[in-house]
Length: 387
Image (cartoon, rainbow, N blue to C red; front, side):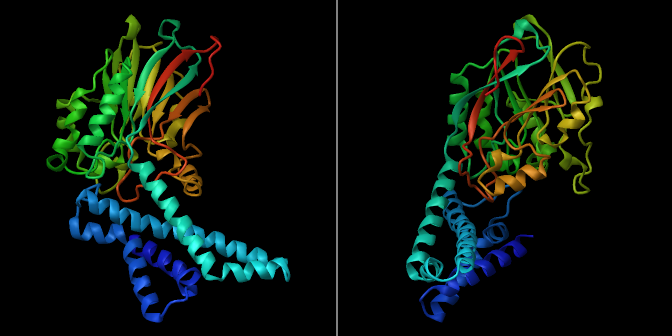
């Protein structure tokens, strides 16, 4: 897959951009080689440094190679815009259309394209790597107990703790989360990228997460890739209570609620052959007429989960908020229309958290900032509206 991706990306950038540059054939050949190496960054880095889930390269090299890879991707997008503009100018005929075509084929346009791609690349990389700020959000739920109106829950999805998002980053995430004094902390999957021995120091700060009514987590696809069975005891030692097709009863303010977590669909892959998401099993033995907060890493099964009227709120991640324009539309399609924020799904309230980190294979965020979400849950009818 990565090879095909690299070939397509390199071919289009060459035909649409590099071929038009006023440089020698030797220089163009060198640029083609550099473009292919940058586009194939994941393939090349994994073959050299390996790593399960993440790329185990030095952090400076991860940043530099990410910049080069993302530059080619942004140049690819800018080249498409340039080609569409050229087509429109062609359809416009002579006059202004011809003037536009001449400009688009010139060296000035090439410099503008490169500058725009580099600016987008840098902004996207900085946006991905930064420590997320806290964002207050609010959901209003029907039949939510009045005594739990205003319950504050920290939602931390998709941390992807790795060489890219290492211990100093995690320490600041924990510090900012704890400064908000949430009543409960929920982590809906993709906490780690890499094996336990490589990530031991990076995940250690998670032990400082605490809340009066518990720190609960479910697993995401990257936990499986990173050898889930080895991680489960590590998570428990860190104080993260893993709910794998299971539930627990919490009593915030003395009122019982069920906190449940599901396995991820990745479990069903022949590569892992583990139990997949099973809502009936997760809620087996749960008290009736008690509201359920459900964690499932992917939002795609929300309609299926909505068939159980006891589930009042589903918390998911996985989409990273769409990451950037254009890509967001594909991510939305792949997740049944859910990409970021609050949704009403057949009576179920779904909240898709935009995530804190990213997979280091493609770290970019443009106009979709990462965040530490403090979600305040209100009972319907009290004049509150979701944000």
